[in-house]
Amino acid sequence: MKYLYSIFPIIILFFFACKVQKKAINPASLNIHQVKQEGEWKTKPGKCYTKMMSTDGILEFYEFICPTQKTEYELAANCLKKLGYVLIENSNFKTVQGNALIDFQKKYGLAYGALDEATLYLLIQKSNIILK
Image (cartoon, rainbow, N blue to C red; front, side):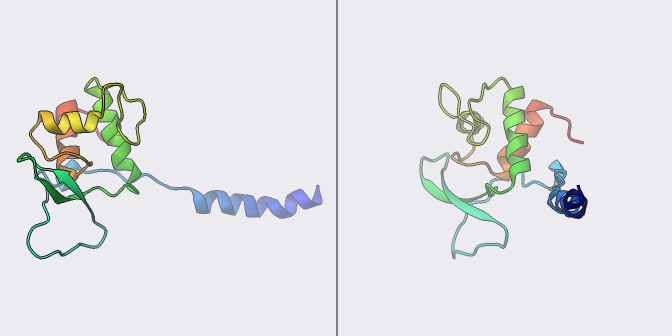
């Protein structure tokens, strides 16, 4: 019992140190246009880039939401579900028919292949999801 009392403060400290708060997403802060990397290659701190298929059928580099930003990916999955997509796996937006995110991006004339701010903005608008 004496041993339990000596590790109890450590357990409590560990619990509070590891507690992560989800950040709130403000749709007004999202880019409403897709950000294509053009000209000289300059990356921005905290931004990720990947090749996405443009509406012209050309693979080009676009800024996208880094996979470490779990809140944004969870929000996108919830929006897609609200729009009627049945997701097999939330993290990659897979459905029985294919990929819900890519289907959504194609439907609205966006470059497709990854979750970006413009897609997230449009998902929020189309699903009428209410953010706290």
